[in-house]
Length: 116
Image 1 (tube, rainbow, N blue to C red):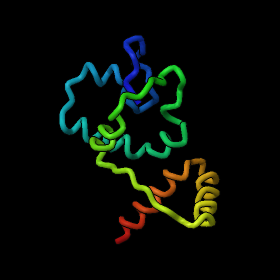
Image 2 (image 1 turned 135 degrees about the horizontal axis):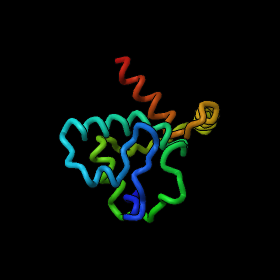
Image 3 (image 1 turned 45 degrees about the vertical axis):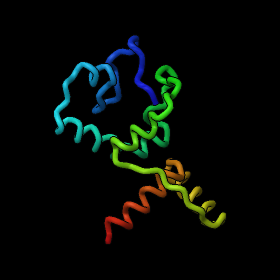
Image 4 (image 1 turned 90 degrees about the vertical axis):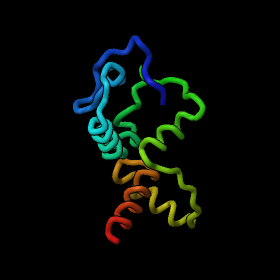
C-alpha cells in the first residue's frame, strides 16, 4: 500500500495518524514504537477491511514496498500446508469472527507462543 497522494487531507480514523501528518512530523523513536504497536493491534481491522479499504486511498503498489513494511513491523510471511478439513474449519471460524483466515491463524499462533 502506497502513501496517499498530495491531494489527500488529514482526516483519518479516530486514534490514527494520517500520512500527511506523518510526513510533516519528525518522529521520535517513541512515536515510531507507538505507531508500530497500534498497527500491530489493528491487524484484524486492516485484514477484515474495516481499515484501509476506502477506494479513494487505493494506489498501485511499488515493488518491494510490502517487504519494507514487513521488515519495519518485524513480521515475516509464512507459507504452510494444512489438511483441507482443517483449513475449511479455520475459515469458518474466521468468518464467524468477521476476520480473514490469515488474521485468525496469526492470532492462534501468537497466543500459543505467548502461553509458552
